[in-house]
Image 1: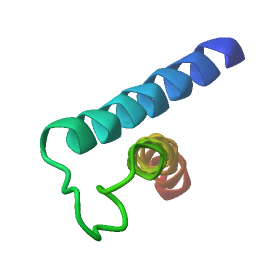
Image 2: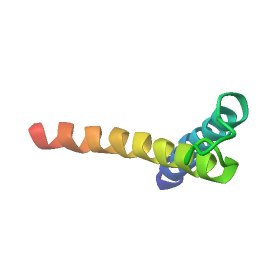
Image 3: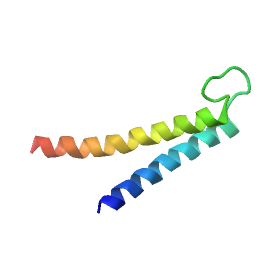
Image 4: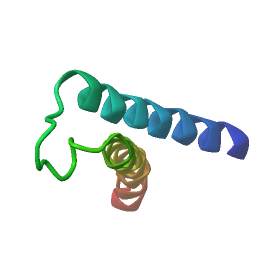
Length: 68
């Protein structure tokens, strides 16, 4: 059961990283943009957003348990 949780988190983080790279590739600027001007930074930023989404899901479950 614990492996499923880590696998789900890894998938969500990977989707975020892919989204960050795709944002760089299709929308990002070539000037002095800090996040979208570099593919590595854009990918890491997308992965961080994916990590935040995984934490919100687990936080929502913890808050729901505490209210009962």
